[in-house]
Image (cartoon, rainbow, N blue to C red; front, side, top):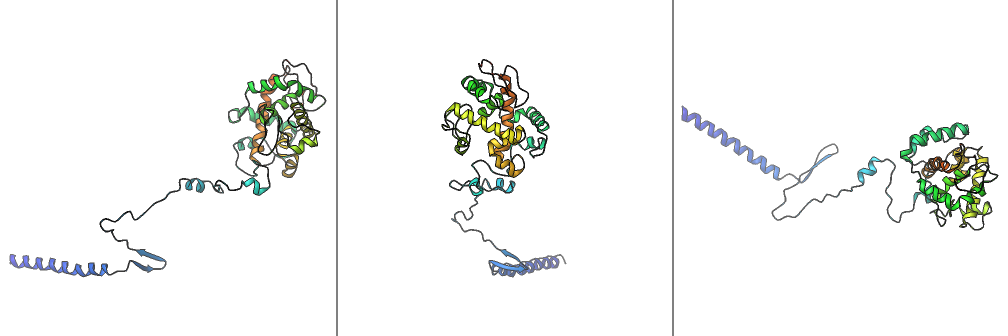
Length: 297
């Protein structure tokens, strides 16, 4: 009986093995690609033969995730035109771009119609609270500019609504006191006057420090009057042009301009400390320490 059971089991195992052989044969006859149903297609990949080289090459763009994680950003290759050119803007003035100074304009309204004094106080408070986020010129830089051009600054501001401390701050931010400075947009000199602006305000030698300062002060004085003695709007106009302020009904949404205003105001808080009597407003007169000329607003 035991032998009969052993033979039966052996025959059963043999039968199962024989049944499996046709299945393997049929699998070998399957096509490399087959349609299973709907839009799904499977493809069989055969094992490479001996001595076969690499069959798959994987290339990864290290910047791909960066562009995917920043919606709207498009990589610009060397030789591609700058986006400002396509928009008809001066270099650096790109509208509606993210800025490192968004935090500043979250607390200081950029719109027209705000009381100038209220906005100015808010602007200075934001400068104080965010001092570590603003690139403020060094005191030594401001002192050097005052030593070299203080008399010209004080002389140019006589009879205007422009504080000498404001002029000193603008020069520090615009050119760091470099007489020969020329920007990528073509602005020149200590106060970075565009040729058209220089001609508009009677500057014949744009690189002459005295004339450049006089032209810049005259323009600032005009802007302060144009925008109701609002220093925030006046500085925005100095950087982007008064037309841009009027068009956008406030500080234009240009990253450069949105950074420029707090930088100059931060520089002004340092520059006013170089006056014998620190001015409270950007329209107040002052006398620089060691200067021989008095300026009154």
